[in-house]
Image (cartoon, rainbow, N blue to C red; front, side, top):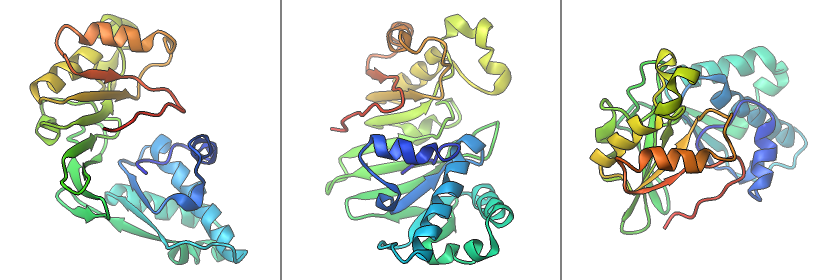
Length: 240
């Protein structure tokens, strides 16, 4: 799982996908912003409660994040958990600080941690190679946009998940550049140059949800010929 959301909504989100908290074995948190981090606090509290009740039947959850992430997660738990709960965190989870270049080997994938080169916050993404022959690659930049600074990390990716705040046509409404965000056509242009085959845009404005996919596809089509997705909560995308 990549990122945990901003609160106890993590449980409803998992339920919509047919999973529960104990199905997660590894969690990567890309950066310290509350809408990506705080769900992990709720998740840890839930796992500790299951452990106290004697009904936690899973290996320890492995959590990975940069130093800002792991320091904040531990400190928030220390300040908000009962001491008896905080003392049990190491029983239910291991919290590992990673740096770009570190790798993680899984049964069917290899995960490489990458620098998102964010100007806003220390953000660490992943490049995942799937399948036995490592033939499918997924790059996730958290909610950072694809820019000239991190484009090499996404080169030749089969799938890229990254931020794009709004259309360039709506820049005067949402003012993305003032907040270190980027527009659809900015990201699409870099995706084309990096030979990204499928582009999944997240962290987008929410005023045009019903029409957003068509509007974003229309703006990106002038510079990007790959497949573009703009999912909403609950959507599933088949990785092939």
